[in-house]
Length: 213
Image (cartoon, rainbow, N blue to C red; front, side, top):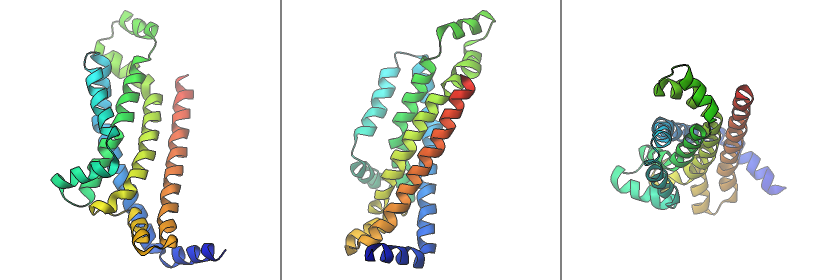
């Protein structure tokens, strides 16, 4: 009970700082995921359109995902230096696989009869992609985006080890000072962000599925 009282008191007294770290944490994730969407969706489409490229693209993004997060950020730090930019690039690389793979699978899963109907009415390959294949793949893409967001929120907590901010700064400070209150003060908001992102994107995913059903 004393711990909970101490935690609530600490979070109340440091509300402004925790809020600033929370906003910084969210921004890092949004920028990283945004970059992954800009790069990952075209790569997923490219893999779906050209089957010979698919194993290469999927394998490269898979290898990126397999690199331990701290090692990945340490490598990036060597070339990009400390700070916000490095963690954003790290989150971008970590988020690529679920976005590329789900875009690829979504496009490939479109029923052949629907494609044939499009071809039958004279659609070009580009029109088929823009008007049929990509719209029908959006539920898959949303599932990938949901997974990528949760991963990115988690990985972002180690950002302070490379000079970035976010809620990990509070957690790392708590580890250094052996303060469980500070650790929880950073971990609880980070967990809440992950839960909210998962629920929100899950809702969007279900709605897109219903709309396209």
